[in-house]
Amino acid sequence: MKTLKLSLIGLIAIVLTACHSPQKDSESATKDYIKAKLNDPSSYEPVSFSKIDTVYTTFETTTGKEITKSFDDLVEEVKANNKTFDNIKEANDLGIIKYDWYHGSKFDIAERKSMDSLLTLSKALLGKAELVEKKKKEMEASFKKQPDGFSLIHSFRAKNALGVLMLDKYKVTLNKKFEVIGAETIE
Image 1 (cartoon, rainbow, N blue to C red):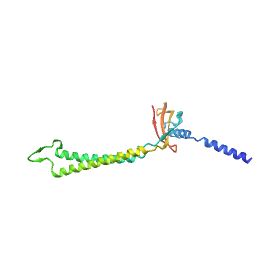
Image 2: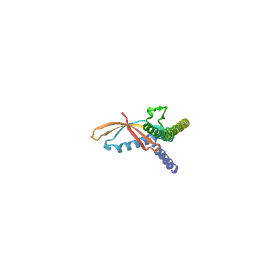
Image 3: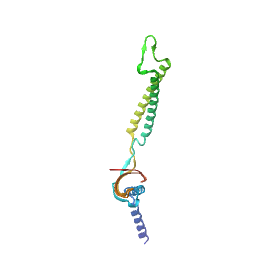
Image 4: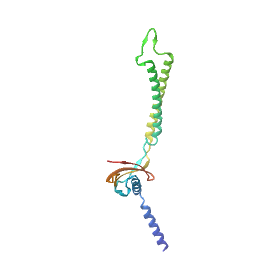
C-alpha cells in the first residue's frame, strides 16, 4: 500500500513538472504582458502562438559595448580637435593662405605651434583608432554566442480604445527567466 501511494505521488510530481515547458512558460508570460497593456483586458482572445525561438547574445550587445564606447570617445576627441582647427582657420583665413616674399606667411609662431600640436594629436588619435579597430576584430573573431532568452510571435483579438474588436500580431521577446522584455507590432 505504501509503495502504491509513493508511486502515485511520484507520478503526480512527474506530471506536474512536465506541464512546465519553455513554450508554455513563454505563452503564459506573453498573455499576462499583453493583457496588462490592453484597453479592455477582458476582451483578450489568444489566436495563435509561434514556436519559441532562442535569442542569442551578439557581440554588439555584450563585449562590443566597451569597444564602441572607446571608439565613441575617440570620435569626440577628433571632433574637439577639428573644432580647434576650424577656430584657427577662421581666425586666420586658412582657406586663402597668402605668402608674400616681404612679409612671409600669414601665421605667427604660436599659430604654427598650435597647428603642429593638432597634427601630432590627430596622428595619435588615428593610431588609437587603428588599435581599437584591431582589438575589435580580434574580439569579434573569438566571440561565442550564448543563449540569452526567447522570442515568439503572438496573434490575438482584443478591443481597442473605441471598443472595436481588432486582430493584432506581436513579436514578443523574453529573457531567460521568461519575463517579457519587449514587444513590437508586426504587420
